[in-house]
Image 1: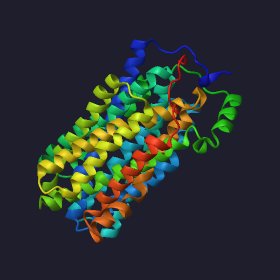
Image 2 (image 1 turned 30 degrees about the vertical axis):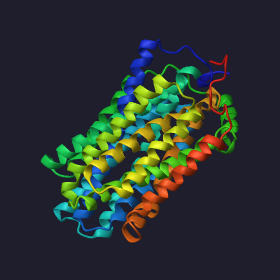
Image 3 (image 1 turned 90 degrees about the vertical axis):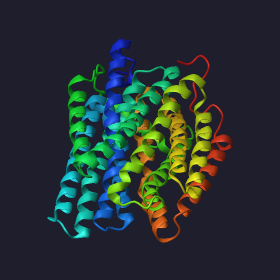
Image 4 (image 1 turned 180 degrees about the vertical axis):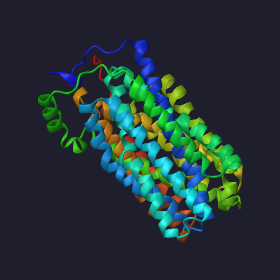
Length: 424
């Protein structure tokens, strides 16, 4: 066979490292923007506009639905068009989405748009561009790394790539708090739009892409092999876990912002000073897990998945009983630590479960599963928080995490998604 499915000569390791670092910064831009939007823009904007809290989550929900639908498409496209082109398209779409969010918010706060329903629709449509087009960046980046790593290297390199997103979430809240205080609550959205546009240009012009386009025969063969990939016994367990983790972390993240506002009795404009540092602590915990613990401990992918449930469970329980800012901070640390351990486990496990020609396909499926939980987060989290009981979302998350622990520890086959002895 010819094309990307072959192990063609690739760039030397120093060049490979520079390419991985560039993708690291690209995902960092996405992570920073998402956290800025989540921590310092949409919740505060909806409170300023006297919009129901669930509307902030619903803006993410529609985008998550589109993200889950289109991620597999972009993963397959990256097999044919090349990882560089698809990743650049994703960053460009993200930049446009954030710019339109900033524009809509500006019109709303300035009084040009006063109808709450119209503002909500415009915010949802602007964010939907991220789901439609921005979803291209992550599967292309993960497949790029998978193309250029041996099986033994993959867990560590995917953890490194994932930590780029985490670095963004570290930087995002700090910048968001400073920008919101000095330039208004919408300034983080404009900053992110510019940053994402710059990263799109850098990927388009600077990311090495040495692999040949996929030949038609190879493409047809790969499409046939990947048609029902999601439901195969070697991939489906990782996708089930990823969807559950997405749902839990979506609820814990989105509800946390409103919980802080209510527990600390602060307004939307004041909330960034509390949520920013808390999200930063959580993201530092992710980095601790992905850049320190995973390389040192060298745990199996399955082990990372069930071990990651434990600090996540502790963080969810802390949110139920938290009555002071210190406990809220600690809960974010535990949530970040759990995410940092669990995500590379299922991402690299799914990658190792398929052959080279299906790396784009499986990357798209994994990224799709990562977003599925956010589709129902407004109902599962924010609606329940606002209209039923403010502690119930965290109780439901704790119960789901306990089930995920049992599933990963006892329900998944041993050896699934692992490097076997003698394999490279």
